Image (cartoon, rainbow, N blue to C red; front, side, top):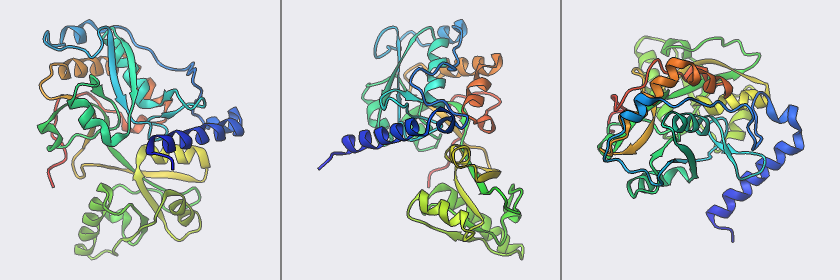
Length: 312
């Protein structure tokens, strides 16, 4: 029997082998999966960010910024074609922050579910792995925001649905969504609003896996698929048969952001916020998001511990 770690390694090795088999042009689709990452964006040291680090903060390894990341899939974080180098938007962003602090980046690949324990036990300085800000998490962790938390509305490339921005735009549509997800919670609220307004209800559809969902969309059994935006951006580039018609904030009707996560009161959160705002101001931030096709998720500015999703 293979353990979870062995199964993960086998999966990513197969993913890498598939990319190699496709060849550079087909494998890329606008994304670079090479371990060398020649297009990676670097940043200059930000003295203001360095000065904002609390004198009492101790890095896990002196001279290094040790960051946990979960290689859950492109474009946020995945393994390169060598099946061992972690690449993606989050690793690139972590590198730019390390540069800003005058440090060398040390990436620690983890299973996403393990980040809270690893962070509180001091295994790494920060987590940069698509962690959303919530009021419950803020009780134990500090946050420095760096992307909007978005879900995407995607349809077949030839669909007559052209824009979904608010509940009425989705009235009567057959929408694929994951059971028990935040996007399902929001769509159920949209449905209630539409019914109250005398509009057609949404028809929510549930499937066991992503592949089956995409087949249902391609075959016309559904009109729309809703998933985390970044996942669908990559699928659209890979398959060339779906397109984005809208985005949905994870905190609808308010914005909810993704953030660098650090230990509560450790003394580095403000420095990371300063570093992020420096990257936004000098254009490095936009270049990183553009490189991974995530410009829609850009923030106008970084904040320390902003309002998060409420406790359920």
